[in-house]
View 1 (spheres, one colour):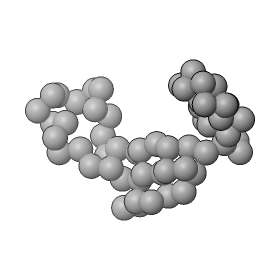
View 2 (cartoon, one colour; view 1 turned 90 degrees about the vertical axis):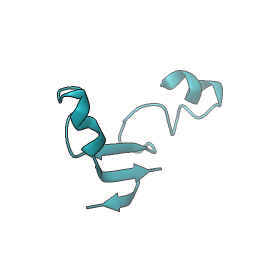
View 3 (cartoon, one colour; view 1 turned 180 degrees about the vertical axis):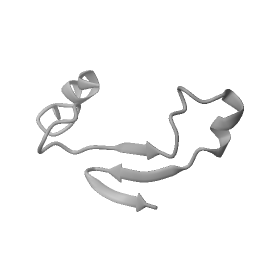
View 4 (cartoon, rainbow, N blue to C red; view 1 turned 120 degrees about the vertical axis):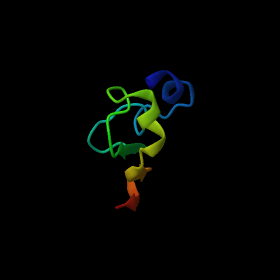
Length: 58
């Protein structure tokens, strides 16, 4: 998503998963692209990282 970071003049600190840049991402309890659609609702966030800081960790 470098486009939005570039458009906001933030490509030096955001827009890609690179050492030293801020990151927002979620680690899910299962791969929602490989399970049956009816199993997706049972998926939980194991780890949530916002701005490079862990905000949820189970």
